[in-house]
Image (cartoon, rainbow, N blue to C red; front, top):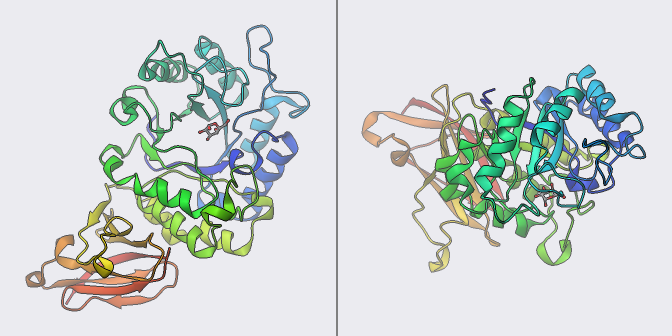
Length: 386
Ligand code: GLA
């Protein structure tokens, strides 16, 4: 199974945490269809931790009958009947992060169970992993079990970016890997995770994607990962828009984490922006690169927090994301020369901003714009005659 574009979907953890059940999942499946999320490309529905009984039965994982009275195959069948793919969660240890049974030493048994239920995606966590065994080996065990279970199951590795995972993850059969610790529903968290992604981009690409963790767009401070919200900055429209634009530019999987049954208009507008999604899902999946910054605001080196990222797209256009992660208004630049368009080539860029539709033709090779604190602009740029 080769995964060509970053997976998109919904995962239960950010909002519901341990309080997940059949009713929530079926309602979320219906909502994916009714709100146009499925049509926009979000085709996986994933149940995270805390879905099983605390003990195996006859050596097998069993769904908790109080939470999932009709069992997991029923939920998978329902998801499939609505045109969605179905994802589940386990861990490379004897316990999951929330202390439910994990798959260590049961890899082939569990892969067979997941295949039987009609699972299409497995998130595989790392809490309590045996310290005597190296991580690459634990992920290889499940990678091989999934590849031989008789069903295409996307393997989503989640070891939070530790133990140089970027060096070995592609040996394991994983299709995406968490390059970060857990996200919180705060601006500080978005910024921290984003700033750590630049050196990891060389590992990203078709087949196995760097996963910057699930989206917090639309959570509005409610839910399982709404921690320290006041002191670390509640996100508003601007912050959620910047978060989504950055994940899209960096070719990260886009897994929604808010309660979509209560999604507000801002969240819906962000999550279903077709042009931004197209940047994320571009067929070429080329590596994004940072564009050199000419200025440091007021003498302070804010080069990383004030960043411009470009990505060459399949049809010859260039995606350009300008991000202001600082807390003050800053000027940001595009210099067409560093994108491969020196003044002498007779070409320039015509920019379309993907949140506002604003169009700008760059003159004399330089474009500057002011960005409010935490804000961004994301463009699709066409190469045109000067
Ligand atoms: C870890 C993962 C999270 C989530 C929880 C579940 O913290 O990184 O994404 O799956 O476990 O317990």
